[in-house]
Length: 174
Ligand SMILES: [Zn+2]
Image (cartoon, rainbow, N blue to C red):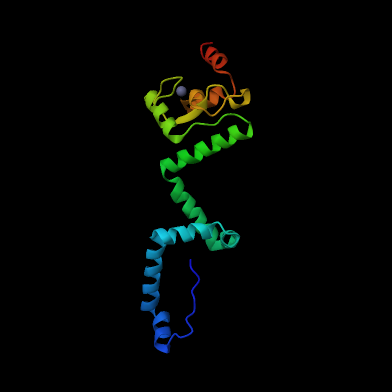
């Protein structure tokens, strides 16, 4: 937001208008329009990066209303499947990074892998809610890469856990 430069030459009538309901509405509409303009977006993006903006944001998020609004925004965001996928990928990427493993899988590639598997579990072929399974587990050095991630249903994924693929598969036939 730009700082409101007080015009010292403002007349009493102008001040009355500025403080009136109509004046406030006109100003708010103008500000909304400005915020959407390329220049406004640029200015806002630059402002968001400043320490001052970060400080205000952190303080706001600590207030009761701020907490409620933040939780609401998060809920709204996470209601979208593409956001949940983004969050999942970010979490897997973070885990791979921490372990010093390659992490190149993108949302786009993951969706096409699902497509290749016909949206079925790669292990039991069942059509169900799919999770991302590491063929070679993270603990055994498996990266978050296209060749190492397959769709797996929850029962298969949690049964396999950190077991190597072949050992786990063999156990399924015992
Ligand atoms: Zn399965």
